[in-house]
Length: 128
Image (cartoon, rainbow, N blue to C red; front, side, top):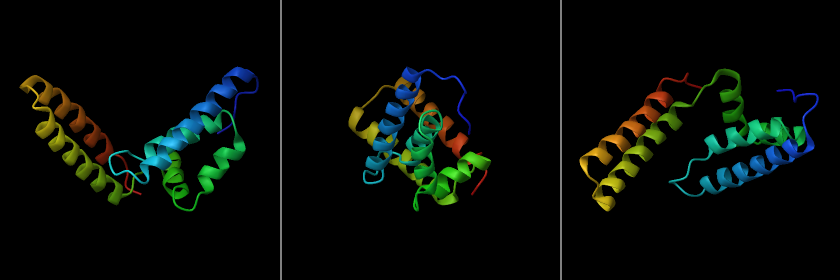
């Protein structure tokens, strides 16, 4: 992805800061099962594309996450294992929400619908 020719310095710094923030969240998510990793790294790569070619290249060349990021960037593809993990994580999260929150039916429907929408999106992407 090419950067705009005349992008302000302040905007570049903002994208750099956001990219570093999302990278940090992504790497924390690699160790915490409830926090996603790759979506944050996709956001980080997009921010670095607008601020730091070196950091963008570093993410895209990363041995563990680079192939996932490149598949997403080139084809919008998600590996089948990641799709099933998102389903499992969503089910676990929804179960904990029901058990710990004791929500009313309206909130259950809203949260369930939002989670269902996310799963439909994930499972309708091409498989890497």
